[in-house]
Image (cartoon, rainbow, N blue to C red; front, side, top):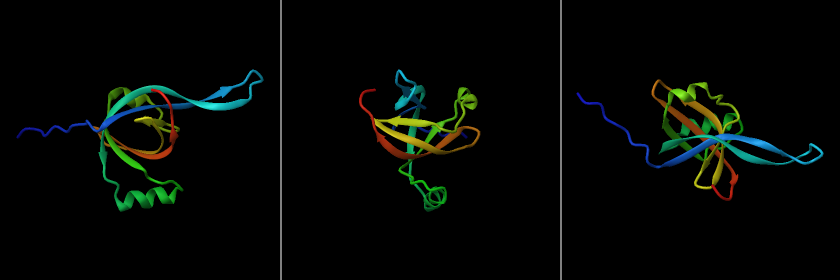
Length: 115
């Protein structure tokens, strides 16, 4: 029996972290997105259970996506991740995984200009 291959062509998520922008006097004056990599994704429907989990930690689920679990991502710290999809910035508040796939739960936190 042949394995069914999934397609991840709903979009690209650039993941990274928000870095502080400092003034000459070392005061934080803003944040900028520092890209660490990219993942192609498939958008999933959000279940009622997902809404309850997010509500329990004080978040709102705006998007749930599924990506391939690349071996290089096993070394990436999954806390404080930020994702950028089509010019929108999302906070990654939860990452589930199995042996082949990652499931990202995203909350929209803003827009950004440029790539």
